[in-house]
Amino acid sequence: MFDNLSERLTGIVKRLRGEARLTEENIDATLREVRMALLEADVALPVVRTFVERVRERALGQEVIGTLTPGQALIRVVRDELTDLMGEAGVGLDFAAQPPIVVLMAGLQGSGKTTSAAKLAKRLKENERKNVAMVSCDVYRPAAIEQLRILAGEVGVDCYPSEAGKSPTQIAGAALDQARRQLKDVLIVDTAGRLTIDEAMMNEIRALHAALTPHETLFVIDSMMGQDAVRTAQAFNDALPLTGVVLTKADGDARGGAALSVRHVTGKPIKYLGVGEKLHALEPFHPDRMASRILGMGDVLTLIEEVEQKVDKQKAAKVAEKISKGKGFDLQDFREQIDQMRNMGGLSALLTKLPGVSELPEQMKNRVNDKEMTRLAAIIDSMTPQERRFPAIIKSSRKKRIAAGSGTDVQDINRLLKQFDNMQRMMKKVSKKGGLQALMRGMRGQFPPGGGMPPFR
Image (cartoon, rainbow, N blue to C red; front, top):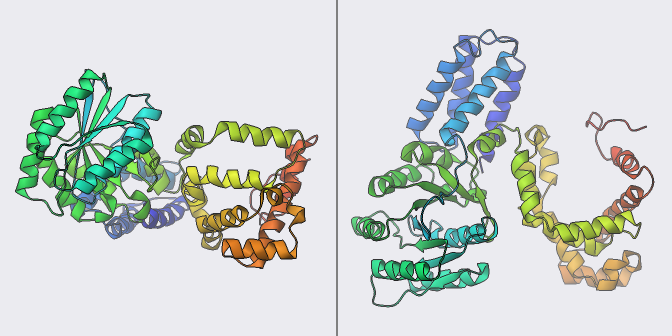
């Protein structure tokens, strides 16, 4: 998400850092570029106008002009205004009410309401330790009811029945009564959508809202809608007292215009981002962190939180103990590390959160490829347990069998084994005295001149 906008803005940032002095002329020139970058990212024109005007007002004041590092000061202004545009502080769900807290999911058909409901249930159960139940009020699509039931089973929460012949308000009312009897903390209500906004749809969801008086009403929108997101957001905001927004399919949207427009139009905070198809792929939205990410400054806090939540600490400790005892790092360990990386969204997702990555050459960034990780996993999966533990036994005939099983070439097998051999040698150095320094010395040759690796003595 925001790939195109980030690329444009980081280019502007690099030029600004070199400015010894900022004047009204070069501030205007910079803001023209910022304006074009936002419009190309599909941000709504009224939002762009407001944003650029606010940056200009602050930039032409004493806050930037006359400072020792005016370029840096202007970058800070842009970052602060981006943060404000997306909603200032990150806002989660409000649990300050008598349980069960009712969360009503609203949005167009195909926006990802049902999947988002299941993702939210999983997150509340695992991260917030809440006792969650779900119900579908989409009486027009039996497949949506069945989908929610299956997803509820996958995340381990109750899904209340949606009886045929009953209205959405009757189904929701019965579910709320059952949630109260079972002492549930949260009831997530999935609603029907339409392909377009129509009065019947809005009347139905107004009636549902009136019957349930939900504590949270979340507007679910596909982030790839672009300019249409503004019109849709406005219609739902006029019909319902929304409390927040869930942006889905953010991983497939390189522009990010919806995220920058919806908050401005509705005045409601973006609470969650859907960043993949898996049920764990729902992230809390932090505007300040996202603004830093857009400007190429990274998002280390989110990275640390993801490691804490998604990395299997027992497996990581087991590998660390193996290495410390000099028992070696085998291909099965490597395969598990690939899975850990996938749980965190893959290498490309990790890179977006690291500071300074935007300034790497494009050729180097392109070499970091999640498809390559998938290929490596397929190769290792085609090996026997013995081959994973003792890669040295993999000779010509075994290589041909593994290549055929993984849909790759023998050259791919050779490349993996060579890379793994180098990695294994480095891991052995870690287990010896002064291991970390030895490891860093071994890695130095893999970095280009000026790559920032400090000398080790």
